Image (tube, rainbow, N blue to C red):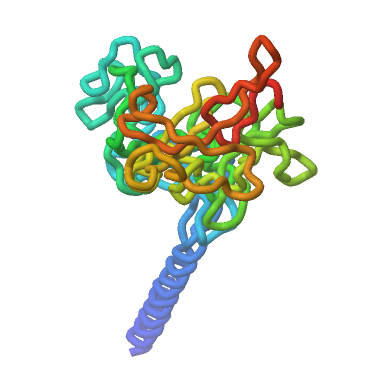
Length: 339
């Protein structure tokens, strides 16, 4: 009888210990889910361990360095399916002289990658994807932007009125951004880049010492923080409203009947406008806005600038042999003498 009582007591104690261990394990698991105990270089962000990063190159090829709303820090986040930066994919160099957009041997054409460039001689052409609808379809350091169908790596002649989209590198001046990390694609080499401006209108720009370090349609003035300066658009905005002389990247950025022209020397891009009645005539282009550095003229289609008569901005581009001002198409960009 005494043995039975002892056995019962021992069994009860063992059972209690077992239950206690089970409850302890359950409590530990719940705690672990809330605080995983991340490895060095990782932090618990949104309940998961995230690898911290400061550049796109800090992350694996299928991840992007992002700035989420759930943390002030930047961390590696897995891309959507099909978005990779491995060789032959986003950002990988491609030979423009082959004059091939699709089925390019340097790009992963089986997965939709093509060669993106500004012409058959573009030494900076890279593999990307055309036809995107949102930034989420591109990896970190890229955005879904508009561009004209041509020029491209197969055709140096520009198209008119035909625009498309593609995932493009944000390192180009005035590309949209949220934080500094957005402005550099994987493997970027160049001047320090910063994301400047106000929420909803932020843009990528490079540090500068004076105007000579900026594009001709920008000036060295914006405060990049810490006493540093960066280039800012003279027009006051990277995104125009489509009117005459508004900044643009493609014809689709301009109002109906307007085209996005690239100035031959300064490389400034600005919209033309459709003249009243569709043809050049007295007053067809309206008055010059107050305070702008350009004047307005109507250029006839016969000169080959655009396929239709177009209102354009004009700016002095140096002087002729007699010292007289030499006007040339342009809006905000300073000419060789002014800058």
